[in-house]
Amino acid sequence: MTLKTNVMWVTAQVLGYMDPNFDVYEFAEACGISTTTRWGRKDGGIDAGLRKDQYGRMMRPGTWAIDENEVITTVTSDFFHSPTCEMFRQGWQGAPVLSYPADAVPPRWSPCSHCRPQAQG
Image 1 (cartoon, rainbow, N blue to C red):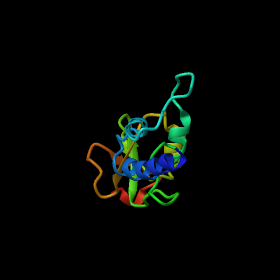
Image 2: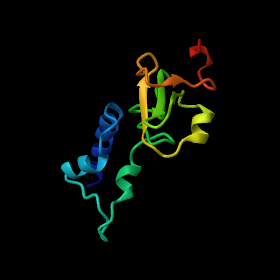
Image 3: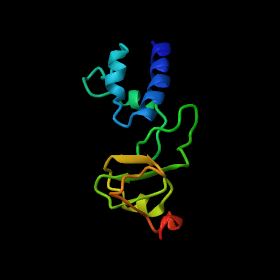
């Protein structure tokens, strides 16, 4: 069972990195791994095997890194930020984080003046 769980985590890391809507619990169930505790609650150990940043985004498979060419935002935000933006960290309200390549951000969001001043103007 340990080997099966480890294989599920490695595969889930790749799939979750590629698809922000990936559900590790659905995937684990499809792999034949129980996702509940003996009391019937969701087993937090399933999600704990994945490498994520402080916002819950999957890190690049095989590393503890986030793509440097990426920017982040939320549906409720007016701006996009670098993953290390202190203003985003202070104001983040727990909404799902959206990430985009820096050169492909939809026009709905403007660059954050605190973390991406070179993008202004």
